[in-house]
Image 1 (spheres, rainbow, N blue to C red):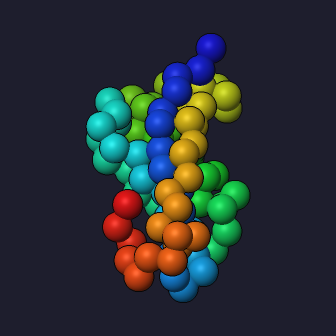
Image 2: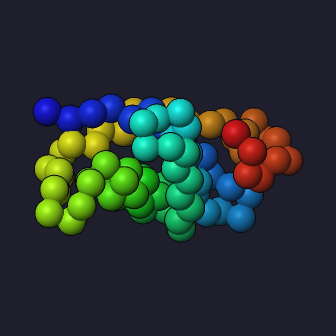
Length: 84
């Protein structure tokens, strides 16, 4: 059984990707990477790391379930590069 974490992902003007998870029980999480898949993997791993109380209390691989929404700033032609 997994826990859902809402996050927003968007491509920045430089071509990299950023993901943000706000207001969850693990606090604010921000990740940036070269590809969309990589940024989602980083986000999932960081949330998983924060959920584990110690290295011995590992959670299962499917525990963190991201609910991804796309931010359309770049697609809409906005000049902003890092603000959701």
